[in-house]
Image (cartoon, rainbow, N blue to C red):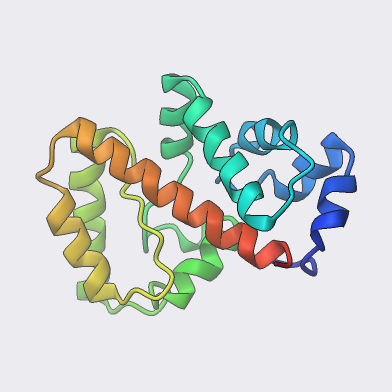
Length: 170
């Protein structure tokens, strides 16, 4: 996050285009989520803002939600091509400092997951170690597609929450 956190009153006062410009990246490369949330203003609390983003995601078409999932980067493989938020989050989990064997394991897991589900493995990595992330891969990879799509969306909503909490004062 490069800009200082905003007070909720300032968030509510933003023109819709400015709101989308400021919060369009909260849902990875999917500004339609911020546009949907903007229409729910004024937000009485930061929690209601988080809920508006979640409602926008849930209210999106199946195609839009799948595109949102596909907009997320693979973990630990394209650190140079990440959004600033993703780069910071993955670095915080140590994914920028993996050794060759760990990196190869992540690449293998990413490939297997993407082939099975058609979108990248998504996990809100804040506070997680590389070992915990790999364990989550192993736990989620054999699950049914419908269950895993819902789990991925829940992780997206966690990421959105964390990013809003960084950008908006309580």
